Image (tube, rainbow, N blue to C red; front, top):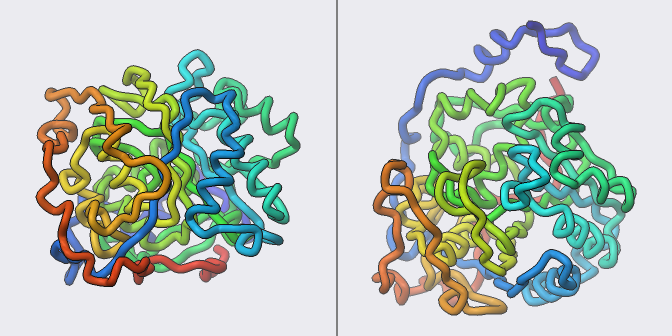
Amino acid sequence: MPVPDGSGKPERSRRSFLALLGAGGAAGLGAGWWYHGPHEGGLTAEVFIGRAERYDSPLGDLLMRALRELGWGPEGIRGRRVLLKPNLVEPNRAHSHINTHPLLIRAAAETFLRLGAASVTVAEGAGHVRDSLLVLEESGLAEVLVEDRIPFVDLNTDSFFRVPNRGRFTRLDSLLLPATLRQADLVVSMPKLKTHHWTGVTLSLKNLFGLMPGSVYGWPKNVFHQEGIHQSIVDIAASVPVHLAIVDGIVGMEGDGPILGAPRPAGVLVVGRNLAAVDATCARLMGIDPRKIAYLAWASGRLGPIREAHIAQRGEDWRSLRQPFALIDDIPAQRGIRLAAVDPWAHAARGNGGQYTQSPFSRGGQLAGDIL
């Protein structure tokens, strides 16, 4: 069935889009991409962990503290257009551990507006259900958006533009991104703290799958499954500027995630400006070794640091809040990923004087590319 390109040009078939993207089976590693060693190219980052036991607690105050400790004040947010990208993988109001909680999304929106943001928009391209209204209603988010007058964009049906694939872990030469991203100055990934039956964990980097339009990549983003999920995560993260992660770990999910797992109250919010560092910290909180998660191992020294020694902890110490999430040995992606009692790399040399160094694959500002 022809897919409208959203730009007033003649419709193109889905087959032609896949040919344009060079879609195919699982791809190998791109040339020149290899392990960067324990120094991780000198990259360091800061990650904040805050205690939060309930969704009706003052989450806005905790987020304000997190941003302050990460060096983000009104001067970095005032007048900026903020896009919040939650995880709405499956509409199910009865199981709040599946999706990013609406009250955390509300708290984030209120926090950015208090700091002077020009606007806040919530956007998602759900991977399983094509009816975005159903997703919003059943997740409980619709009520919050209506009450707070927060606009929502269905990224699955948005018009799109092309950018080069800067990761090159897959065979895709370019990626098609929703035009809404070009109207945002700050993009915030807001995932749930969950295990995953294909990637071991699903956190702020995996959450970026929901940025990719389903009208191009299918449901549940089949092109990326064919190219390799871990490889695709790195490619998307290397190509799309995302400025902050806020991970909902108040109630997470363990076992057969990202949908069928059991709720796991973890009582944490994890916030940081480098998504690789945030996800590595979250993995440790879950009792999982980030070096044993393929996309995090590949991100090491490229998208950011994952070594504990290269991540400056703000707020709570992760060790005091560590709760080993249940894993299922029959799921290959969850086999053998448990974090050892002692991390042999915990005291590796920082190599950069402990100063935060931005990954060469991270960049702010507006996305370049041609509207198709």
